[in-house]
Amino acid sequence: MKQITFFVLSALILTGMSCKSMKEKKQDKNDKSIPSAILVENMEEYRNNADFSITDVAIEGNIMNIDVQYSGGCQEHEFKLLGMKAIQKSLPPKRGVFLYHNSNGDNCRSIVEEKLQFDISVLAYEGGEIILNLDAWATPISYTKSN
Image (cartoon, rainbow, N blue to C red; front, side, top):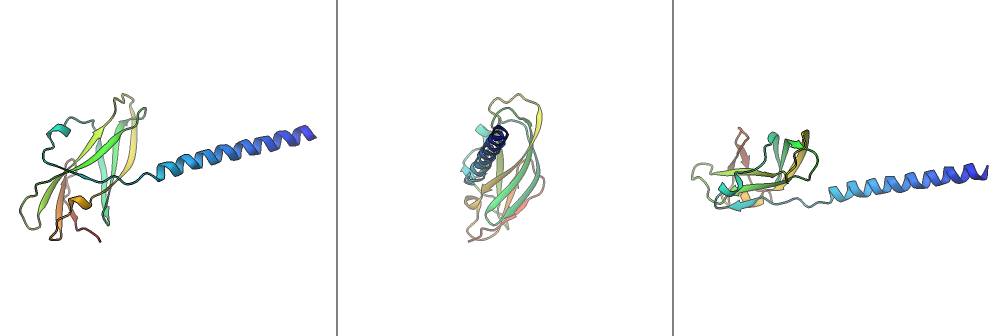
């Protein structure tokens, strides 16, 4: 009877430890700070990137949420949101924006869906509203910086 109790208690302790470990990993992933968009003079050096598709875009405050799909699953993929420094002089003004995808050589073929977030404060226009034309997304995105 003591052996059974010992094995049950050992199993419960190990289960609790593995759950804690999984919770810590999930917490670590959630603790990532939100990367900022980057202003660039020229996007040509970023045009040679890995394939992906954008399935949804939304702005909440100064955060742009981008849902993407890509082929992979074996390596960590990196995304950068790039905005042109120059803006088009129109009413409201317009800025070209590009999502750069580095697959880090991932040749796996699973379809990965990922939700990306970027702080887009640097893409704002001092005078108010700006239209962000995100490459690979047909709908222009209206943005006014939140305080």
